[in-house]
Length: 442
Image (cartoon, helix red, strand yellow):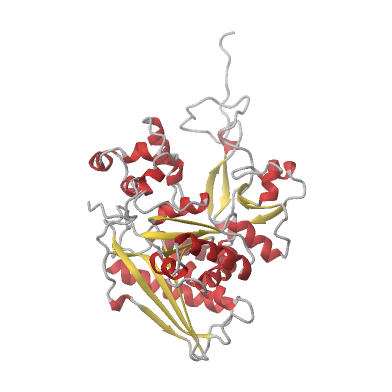
């Protein structure tokens, strides 16, 4: 595999962005004690909440007991993306060519803007000041070779010298591989059991040994730990026929429901075109034209291939973000033209990631989810269930059925000690009525 050096990138990171967006949507002060929950656990919390003892992964009851004034919000990716458009617009006033990695994180090439600003440090200071002035939020900037290292550098507020990325990454813990949107907890746990604790330990392994011993995603993780380019240099130039164009002259898009419908149709069409060629999109450019001729563009970057739902979400988030800007900055009329351009595509093998049934049954998981949704629409939300594990002493208490799409109730940690619990292994057969038992001895 070609060990090409990673491009030098700047990453701008807004700490605790889900909480910042939730507080802004609710009209609360930025200093409020607040937390965002997914299910029953904290996924993000404000600095005030952390000062009172709230932390990520904490259960809701414990968080509220530590901070009685805690403002509680549910996890809402749409809200996060809509409010992040203000930050992206502020960054664009200083540097062009930005890419939104996820709500809360922006990446952009550093060479050109740094020359214009005078230095990389001066560019970082300008961006932080501009985001604070125009978007009213705090941000941190990191610069390094490659997006992975730049993201970590932003969290630490560091500017890594060119060529020093591997030395910067070496002492960091392996848990850094599990960035938001990439779940590598299983790989990290496996590496820990093998006695590897830092990115430098993992990077010291030979690439052929990693490919022969670990799962596919470990090859990409190994490249990141070595400070190499996130993607191998086998990227393809997307053919122009992959671009999806939609016009809405008769009914301009100026409502959220209309945007959602158009985004779903255009996203599905783009995904099918890519899947028919055994390709996947890792960088999506979204262009919109309004009735008055205004043009808006934004690029979203993804570390893993985008599914149809991933494309749809980004199109919907971006269009909603444009329409919900400040009154002096939002489009003056509805959207009449929408163009989705796969700015960067990769084959399934280029990222060592699988594309399930690519070109044969594109987006099988999403199709299954839509079919289940149709069944619920016909028969009711309680017609389809998912089995979830919870706390309890016996199988009947531990396994519960939750309607498809609902979050499981907070019924206890299944791994917590339960006095009187049946010992492992669980019985293979559990009769509906208990069998009678006869005691034959003391």
